[in-house]
Image 1: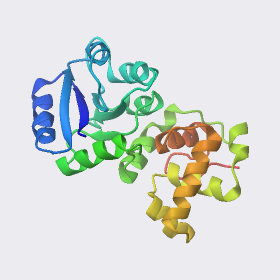
Image 2 (image 1 turned 135 degrees about the horizontal axis):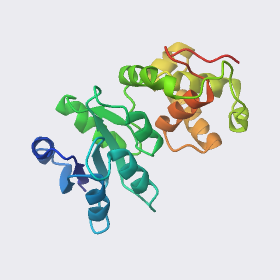
Image 3 (image 1 turned 90 degrees about the vertical axis):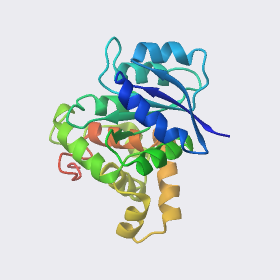
Length: 226
């Protein structure tokens, strides 16, 4: 069955370009388009969509608020934030709002297609290099107390799970974490799954957000003070 994709961007030419790329894929189908967040929400009321490619800066209703409203619905589609990076003040907020990841608008087509497939399968798209760069840039917006705040949920993690969480938050992939901790990728994947379950998080994106908000990770990708 094809992945049903919705394009949300106020620039018609960009939507046309994305549509052409997706239309060439045997496993993807563009089933809807919208020029802003408000129109996207309206269209979703009558159209079944698996993945929404969501621009951030749009008139009427921006991508962050649209993502928040979409993700608050019952059985919502996955949302993949698209940002230009130079104008991505809202990208981190988009992840907090429930997006399953973000990509740069000038990403190579193969990476965009891979991201759509990953999000559709339930994974979060958090490219390590982009994650570190974006979150380091916006970490000053997050609480900074000089020490780690008390989060009772974090106390449920084992020492190893906490170690894995820190590496996930720094943008490392399962393979990179496995190499760093001398574990198998399967073991790392199991640890990540347990972290998500214990903390009540949906995916790796939310792990990153919690780690930065709690002070576990600071600007520069380092761990916070214990």
